[in-house]
Image (cartoon, rainbow over all chains, first blue to last red; front, side, top):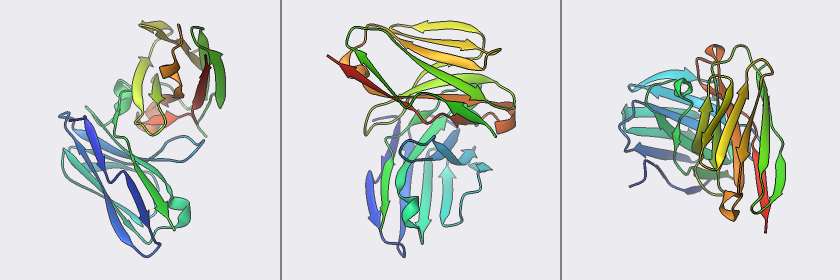
Length: 116
Length: 111
């Protein structure tokens, strides 16, 4: 099993749909992250969870709703998205909530989201 | 604001050496990281520098100069599989030690 698994890999949804992205890590880490990756732009940190508590929320619109039921699972619930939300959504994990301690995050391969 | 600058694209020849530069403007500094991402793949961690100097890991080396707010990733003996995007990222106390990312450098390797 890979360290961080994301499903689905691809998702197409209309602006009125509700969908969820799922992330699971098998590394025993205690922190998990959601990032948004758009072409030719820096990765944007969306949310950070440490020990299942949200510790970072970078002014993300409320149409994105994270959920962390335990230290191994992370969800991103999507509702009433806009076309500009189309992007690659990456999940990551680390030991310690500030991956910056060693700079090392472990990423999944991402969920490619297209909003029509 | 806080920002990182790196070239958008670099082209090199198989077997050669290439250097990817990264300059940063941040409030404070804790460490500089480098990541590799192949098309359709996950970003993977390459290196981390918190102190000035060169860190070597096999064919890849990473350098940091905190006084110049500058670092680089050096790739030697380039192989076709090194074709990927490379991202630098900085952590700072002001960012709660979360990584601030550059926009990435696409490395194109020609035979």
